[in-house]
Amino acid sequence: MLLETTASVDQEVNPWESAAHRFDEAAELLGLDDGMRKVLKRPAMELSVNFPVVLDDGRIEVFTGYRVQHSIARGPAKGGIRFAPDVSLDEVRALAAWMTWKCAVVNIPFGGGKGGVICEPHLLSDGELERITRRYTAEISEFIGPERDVPAPDVNTNEQTMAWIMDTYSMHQRHTVTAVVTGKPLELGGSRGRPEATGRGCMFVSIQALRKLGLPVEGARVVIQGFGNVGGMAARLMSRAGFRIVCIVEWDGAVYNPRGLDIEALTKYRSETGSVRGFPGAGDMDKDEALLLDCDILIPAARENVITSSNADRINAKILCEGANGPTTFVADSILAEKKVFVIPDILANAGGVTVSYFEWVQDRQGYFWTEERVNEELEEIMVASFDAVTHYAERHSVNNRTAAYMLALDRVANAIRRRGLYA
Image 1 (tube, one colour):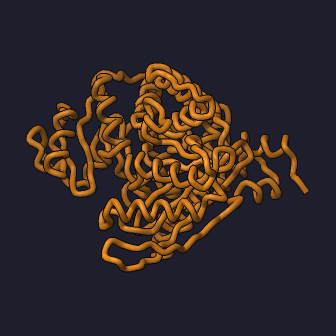
Image 2 (tube, rainbow, N blue to C red; image 1 turned 180 degrees about the vertical axis):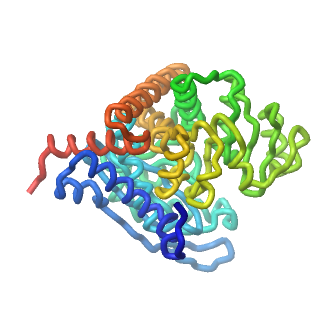
Image 3 (cartoon, one colour; image 1 turned 180 degrees about the horizontal axis):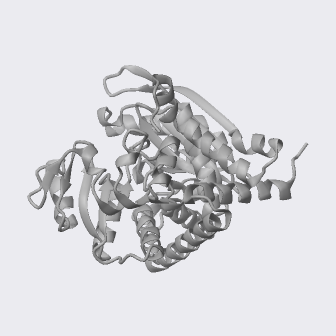
């Protein structure tokens, strides 16, 4: 099915439209009444802030930021903060909703939140980024907190960003509050295993998918789009576990070796040159064509709308493991289903990050910190149990994995709301 008009193409790649479409499908199959659909569909809170920052050259610039809390029915809102020039309220809304469903799928006691600031971080100095972060934090400080809304890193933010947020929030509270954010440096209450968590979670569910399909892990051919925190970590961990990483796709091109890439050498090469292109251990290829390679597992681990109606019919992966949020449009879902691609949806596949963020929040609140071995064992247990829950739900209701994940998540959140009742 191909979209024919510009308007419909725009609708397909709008993340809020994708989230709403999948919500409607799952709600209909669950038989949710109109009232519950209204409660679950709309964000609980949307905050837009415009704040001034003095740049290094003395100019004053006004930046726009957002924080959306989609649901707090099962616990505090949880979700990252991204810095990017294309941040929009629709995108933040969709990502906040995805976080609600993601936390429910892995059954951790959080709701969904998301935030962002419209800026071009690559054109800003560290000092400017710090001032933007601290002023944004001050603007939203009444709406976040360990019991209310717990931010984390996302696109173009990192543990240093979280340290600035934690410090700013703590200064306003007049005491140190480590549990206000996750993804912090270890010395400020961060958790061991957190940087690897999303990529490690992708590996755990990929192993389960291979087993379910009767395919071996050893030598399984993997194409990964994105070589950052998620994709790069998945590549390193999966390579060590016996997977064969045949292609890495980046924003400026891709490198391919059917015998498998030396991920450690490629990591070093990219660090030295700033690109994966020209890597001596592989051949260069077009980044769009690389997504269409014949492989066992395709892991889109970068941004939204990578697999759309324009290329879904040419995907040649047996398993699609969505390391990024929203890499597949809702129109592409039906095309992949017709091709019988085994999809591990984003709200399950990349939930390793929020799961270990939950572990970090627990450790901060207890003041007692776990070994990395315990973190990884607890993560594997939750990811495997969640994979089993989604696939069993899919089989029981005769739906695909994405629909099953949404149905499971909506059912859990709706049940929490019913048990709590509506305050009036």
